[in-house]
Image (cartoon, rainbow, N blue to C red):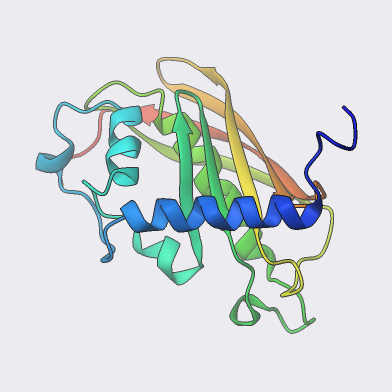
Length: 184
């Protein structure tokens, strides 16, 4: 691809931030957990899309850790997060748990988009590799989760955590257990 067709890092950052702003304008301002009645009859992709459309509440963890769902398609999701000082560990960089939560969200939600109505999942195994430190100088990162396999009782997925400059900060994989959920 020629340099003229490739956006600069500044242009990519502006595009990412504009996309997040547009998505956040659609989301409900409060956070919470959808009720069984709200998701009755919806498959996993419909549930995730309903969250993006502002019909379902975004989860509290997204507010706590400064990340948001940006896009969903069957088998793939993109979350965007902003590393902040409040996410730092004693070493002066973003805590590995922040990486893990963002990756786990992308991985699990990618699996969720493939589920039929009434089915649930839980993370059975999560593996992450942190390959580059994050700090406040990195304004945003994206966790891109993709399903590798979905069976009747088990699914696997992979995800990358990348910056607007194309740098890889972490990658991970998951195995999820698929089940008929317990009534809440």
